[in-house]
Image (tube, helix red, strand yellow):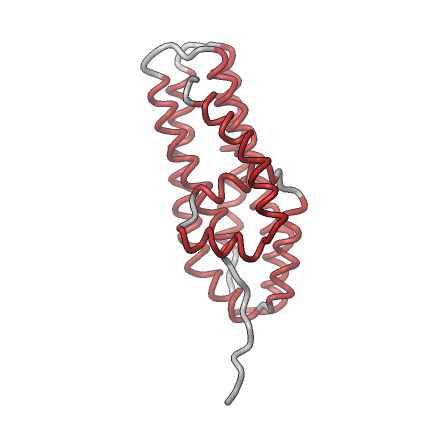
Length: 214
């Protein structure tokens, strides 16, 4: 009987993608709600602070893909993978993220129309990310599974962790897990992940209360 070689576990990147889409969707909705009335300064600062971290997270994610994953796939898979469209998508993201940061600054400054403008920018970002992530998971994930070993994939994950703000990332990713996925994360992460969740969860819940206006 021939052993089937192990393949990379892509749960981490799937959760990262899912968290991005969940956040851009919910903050577009939240900004639209804020446009209907006054936004207290504390709540505006909470929204801007969260979205600043989200923009940092998205930028870091696509930078790791551009600088680590894409070259690795090109070397391993050659003509089997065409990353040009995905790379072009990444080039669109930084100006969009800059626009969201600017809209957040306007929201904190209390400028008229800032919340509606922020909602529009977040809706646009969500649309672009949704299409991009769908394409990436459909075209790139099978290439990763076929051509990269778990050890090589581990290098990509290490690069992703290296620049990540774990106190921000981990609670967001756990929030979009299914029960089975949560169990897997806790099983694989062991005591360190459980400890981080316990500590980071307190700050995450405090941030969520501020976002809700509490």
